[in-house]
Length: 80
Image (cartoon, rainbow, N blue to C red; front, top):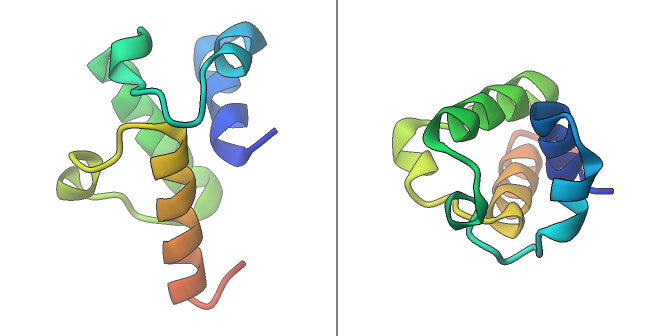
């Protein structure tokens, strides 16, 4: 399970949601509300050390978007 999926499980308290959603499905359109998206960003920042700005959030819509973003920022910072 990807890091973002693991964080979605933690956020929602259920693996079913994270397992059912495709990598390229818009999270907001799939039932995650704006408060949960903010909490997801905070979890991503805490667990990966990658900062996500409000401007970045506007571009992150899917699990794949988050995974690419974290990977790119981790590599740029000399991590992963």
